[in-house]
Length: 211
Image 1: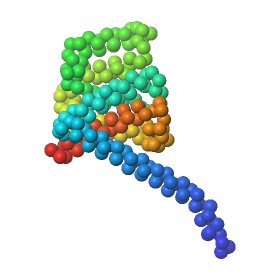
Image 2: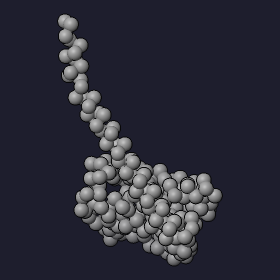
Image 3: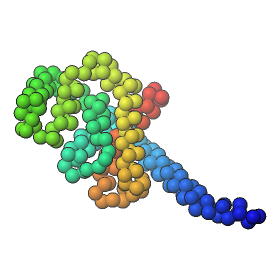
Image 4: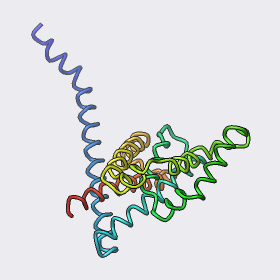
């Protein structure tokens, strides 16, 4: 009877070791992600010559990455990640020139044609057009509070940060860890794109804090 506690401890030790190993792996991934973000931020400052240019550069890169991931999801990148979140992300990072174009008469006509096709000719409306069509429709009908204020405010940056964090952690979990996400030949470009989705809002919050 005196040896029973040591026997129980021995039986539970492997579970504790596995839990500690998983925790250490997560902490290691977070440290590597932070180091990569700091290096990317430093390079942007050196190349851009200023904080403002770095923010604009990151915003453009995040927008391009979101569009790339949206297109890739409808071709050969099939995962369980909720890529519909890319639509509001693109809405908040859409460059002013493109946003004004879609918000105007051109976007209204595109949205009108898309709605007519979806309602009356569903067989001629391909599935891969659903998310782009939703983006255009969202841009056209968005209230001025979202289109004019939140898009250029801390609220829009906060939404992008939440989306970027969610997609990044989902992608890392699906890849089997941060290192594995960069080691898979077919997943490196996806990982870089999702990291950019995360880095832009973080950089924007840093600018808000510094300025």
